[in-house]
Image (cartoon, rainbow, N blue to C red; front, side, top):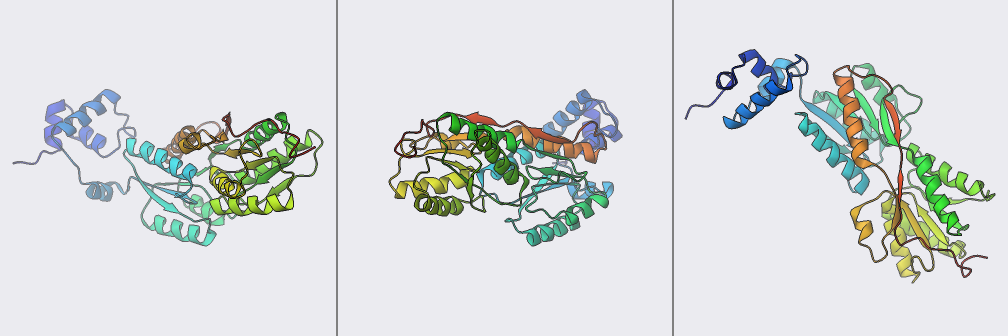
Length: 341
């Protein structure tokens, strides 16, 4: 059976071979080919089961149709969700995502970026794992389109999209205060990350607004183990704690394990709130109140910013903070006198 080719698609659609070729090779926008023509070409390609040789197309165009995505870890549901959303968005645009984890290790992050650079990537979306940026700005100076996601460098001219972590933490802490809690433990994640720093500031500001200048923040990692250890220690150091604000849902899981081992009930004995939503939070024996980040919007804006950089169509602000939202469930309750006076 003869293999169908571009000529067959051109004949089927009554379009020129060059127009068909440009659509097939992802250059429709560059040559301003209308959406109707693009649709006709794609439908005909599907009809003829036409699969172009991407390797050959890449050699001709000098483009790889690949975007690199670097996150701290895919074991964190928040980053896994972002990666999934971005991967889907890129695929719709005809791009392939190369995804890697830095494991919160700056040296590994540098090594990963060197490897990706040798793969002729067309752009990079990155959740930086630390406060070092030279290796990222060096790539930007070489012409690589880059967007920071979730974590960013406020002082640099690199596009970014993140959540307003200060606002989310402030409102989450204020909610606990409105329920009568004053002895609140904040368990934080990676100290050098912008989201963590902003959450800590929001947490402290909410307490300061009711004239509590003594803040109780501990921890140093967005992990289950960190939540577990810090909760265990805090219960012994300060038995008057009536509420815990976990700065991620992974930290909250560690809190749950520790509280369960100590036979402490939620929310009867201690209230618990966390940053980041996930479907499993609603299926726990006590569904967890959380500060939800707009994951789909974060991913979509990151990819739009990146394509704006790639096609040089960026206009307006490319540094955006999105609002967080409190999802009130059953893990927060009124503070009773058994925990604090």
